[in-house]
Image 1 (cartoon, rainbow, N blue to C red):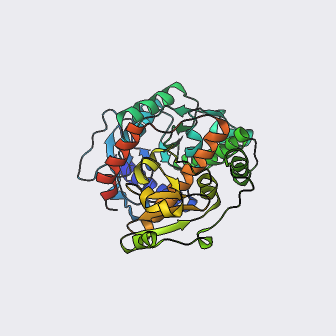
Image 2: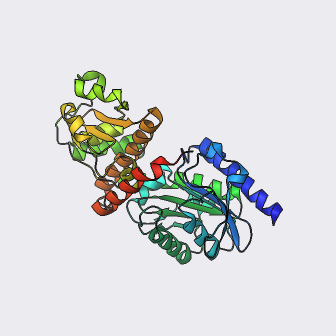
Image 3: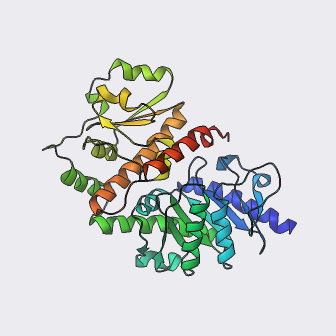
Length: 352
């Protein structure tokens, strides 16, 4: 087993670097595993950046009970990986990501039929596992049910969480993760009857922004109050006036998390208002929408502020998709609060 174990660990490290280069994963988000035998698999450790991993960091686990030895803790989503190896003997490699299009589409709570261009890799249908809070046994059980009930599927959505791609090899699982992102994008366009995200955004503005002749602004167009600029003494601020954030901010409405990353990293809601209200709207949160202008995204440093901006962009795309399709729903308040508390007290403190 020693040779197979070493090879499996090396493949997981290689896959992590490949996924980062492709843009399908970033930071420490997502996890990867490889089968070693009928009884064991290896999985990425908790809270470690992919570009820092060595084969010795990859954790050996038992499929039947997720037990492991050593001081390195495995990914908190280990139960999902174990379920795949338990129910799918044809699978030797698993990739779990929070990739953009698949995560957005997962919010609707439905699986989808795959466009013909991706069927050779994904099969006919991508199921959507029922929601469970990140890193919980409920999420693992719901994922296991989707895997068990859809033995022909090779990719899965995890509602309001992310995606799962499986294969007989690392290359096959990676290619399916990439194909899933293309297929999810096409399904988003089909559901909203548009041909691009720009068209989706413009359709949203026409239907949901009440201001007649709405003209987007940027932070360069407005005066920034002193209490906002003072925040930069203790935190890094990104003044994000990208088009999707501007569109959603223009409604002037508070938005609630559609994806668990948002509850964890941004907050239990994202308030919207004038720039003069931004400091108040940021209380207990890492971002606030500025009506018709964009959003303020805060972090203890530039890296963390960029993460907030990235997640908020995903949230705004999900909000537009839900509004236009009249499907899906935000996370419940209790689920959002639980994830925010756990993240701020535990996961955000993990060092890479």
